[in-house]
Amino acid sequence: MEITVQWVRTSWTKQSRGGDAAARRNAAPVGFRMPPVPASSAHVVRMYEKDSFEPRETLEARRSLAVGLREADGRLRVLPRVDPLFGIPPRPRRPPAVRLQPGQWVRWQLNYRFSSAAGVRGWSYWMDTFNVAYGPVDADIFLSTPTVYIDERGPVR
Image: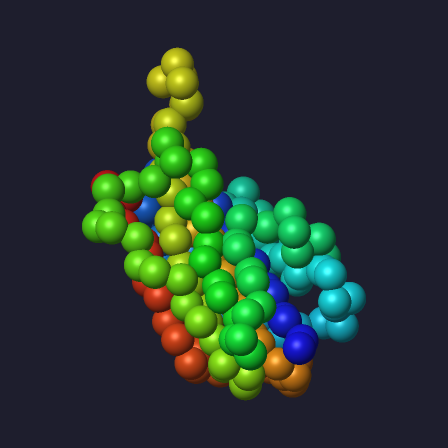
């Protein structure tokens, strides 16, 4: 069965934690129209503060993404990996994997925060959004409301 994967990463620094910059960051989309993608690839969109959160789109091998996908018994098991562990904010226990039936899709969001090892630079942050659909879909699938939404974001202070 077809599996469609879109990974959206938004990256910023403390400068985008308030005011107009935060408004631009918060307005960044978490889903995009899907281009034609080979079966073993994913649509990857990155948005950086330094580029005013302008989307940069590429295709990457699905196996290189931090999301586990496994088909079994007519369902797709989806579970993003939390990677790297030192970058996660405090949050409760992780939710279990989602098992999608054909025609369903999940939007799963996680966030991270980092500081340089020597403390030379300030904090940096990123948010990952994994949009995963099981079965045939149209190009606008990730512009609609997901069947399942998992918000695993924690406080980034």
